Amino acid sequence: MSLRIGIVGLGRIGGGVLRNNFLNDPAGRFDIRVICDVMPIDHVAYLIAHDSTYGRPPFAVDHDGTDLLLGEQRIRYQRVDRRRRPPENDSFGMLRPFDLDVLFDATGTAAIGDFRALLDQRVAKKILCTWNVAGCDLSLVYGVNQDDYDPARHHVVSASTCTGNAMVPICDILDRHIGIDYARIVTIHPELSDQKVLDGYHPSSQLGRACAVSIVPTATNVAKSTELVLPRLAGKLEALSYRVPTAIVSVIDIAAVLARDSTPEEVASLLCEYSNNRLSGILSCEYGAWGHQKASIDYLASPYSAIVLMKHLSLGNRRHLGLALMHDNEFGYCCRVLDVLGVMAANPPS
Ligand SMILES: NC(=O)c1ccc[n+]([C@@H]2O[C@H](COP(=O)([O-])OP(=O)(O)OC[C@H]3O[C@@H](n4cnc5c(N)ncnc54)[C@H](O)[C@@H]3O)[C@@H](O)[C@H]2O)c1
Image (cartoon, rainbow, N blue to C red; front, side):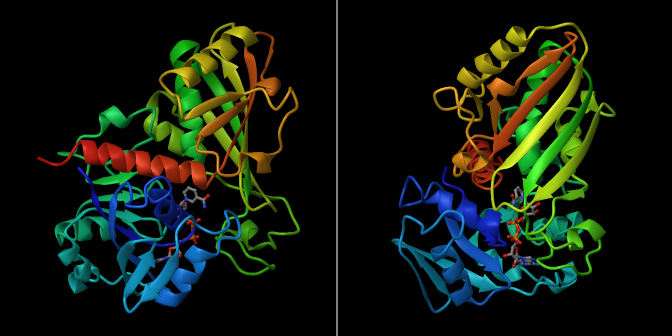
């Protein structure tokens, strides 16, 4: 079944999912029928056609009236108000004629009440969002818990976060086979559009510091993202993020206390076994290029949720595990969003 999809929010993630939808198939993996953002349509076309991180897309871009022209596709563009109006105003009612199976929200700004109202108004059958919106029905990390998706019960689904998609498979493997007593997770994350270019007011004070001149320590929800999918790890994870002045590719550094003695060989063999089988295409175990560790930019446009830097795997006192991961926080995540849409397509509501 080819899902009928609407995208709300055509920023880094909404735009990446749109682009990746047409990467290998000019007709599109899914039927994207309508796109909404607050920008005028010519700004949307401009931003799709010129991407500072990934360059020009592999299809021609233009706009015509209220339609975006992407290769041979004609997709309706609907400019919307940034303020989400109360549900009784039926603010997204104009999307109803598109008969959407899934409304994919990549704004990061909606609350669960907005989503429930859209479902009540029959704007779409399902909502998929890009963050752990409080109260969602399922946080789905592709590769780990996609079999839990039940179309009869799960109407607002989160595709978790980029770091959640990297951490959950690793924690699942380690905890399932060896056990984790405690882990401190440090993410070294590129700039995000929620930061200030120059010092200024931001409700999270550190994110108001000029992002190009500092390493900015800030909160991350990677522990919560992981616990939502693996509740058995609740209370065992702590996390901190450093935002760094790069454009793309995150690092995650994990220091874990294992529940039993192990060896580096056992951990390496477990991770490689999963990367070659159940998590093929999601997890990669990498030994570098001719033994030389690559730099973060070398993972630009990598489709993996997590790439384990095997040269940096360490185990002290048989229990203190050190792991380093990298992942393209946009491209890899957009690949997983399309995978989650694939799960929804394979399990239509009856
Ligand atoms: N950037 C990443 O690495 C990354 C990775 C995984 C998940 N996410 C999540 O994806 C979401 C978006 O992040 P992003 O980096 O793409 O941000 P972004 O700022 O690049 O994009 C957000 C887009 O949503 C639009 N928008 C905001 N409010 C809107 C509204 N009410 N109606 C319509 N459009 C609206 C903005 O104009 C913008 O184009 C966030 O939830 C973020 O946590 C981001």
